[in-house]
Image (cartoon, rainbow, N blue to C red; front, side, top):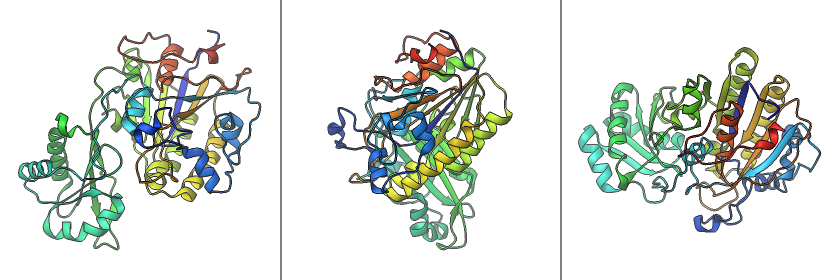
Length: 398
């Protein structure tokens, strides 16, 4: 092991998968390829920095090419867990194998028994109860909610129950109380959900309603220590940007920063690189690819978001130090050319950059997303526990 790194930045392009998993047909996702299909729909993507890191090795992405990239390694990661959602993907990156997927209620809404129990225990009537965009449903139901003091309950393609309420009708504190009740209900096996999310909003009417920064996530905690927990216990930083802290229910998180967009997330990451000296990892989630474009089946918007990310990635790469390691990856797919609005069961890209690399190249596929967390533990000479999966990518230490 010739080289170790002081700071490791893991940037998750949420949902930017790179080809159907071998078992994708079991999930109804045969033939999915988020990155390639988006590029094709856009007539090609302008992604010079991703291309320079080796993205062209991993799929036939229009606008990219196969080139020599000695300062970066490229590979695909297969998902070992049973699922295709945000929590399952991120947890696996940090070593957790999920064998029983979290529940989703995208097509049916939540069962009557769950809604009735939620109404009884919160004292509020529930309206909605279907899969929807958060901005759309408050436009459709917000005036009714504001008038009656009810709760707008909705879901998405993720394992999530979201509750929206106007801050003048139901206080943020009261909304949080209702979400805590929902979290308790949805811990049971028949309803097991990854997250409950409070979604307060303000505004006079449907033309001016907007969500506030008082969002709060109530996540299901990992069943045991992750790679982040091991880092913390050994005195290393685990800095999280975006919804990472919520995904892990703050477990193993040294500090966290909320974001409002991909751009905000990248600017906060650039700020970390420029002005914060630490030893450990910075874990970043950029959710707009998924929430704004994938679920809404908007390939042109998705492609533009990838191009905008590429520009900011270029800005970031110019600032990295010789002992920094950059990892760019994803957590699942969400092919905007696929049927429906659900995530797609895909492999994910992994691009690893350091300014002093000289042997960078395409590497073989890895069997698990957990290669990421294990590589980080290996770098800091921390032995993984027996309940964590995955193996380190040792080639980068040659």
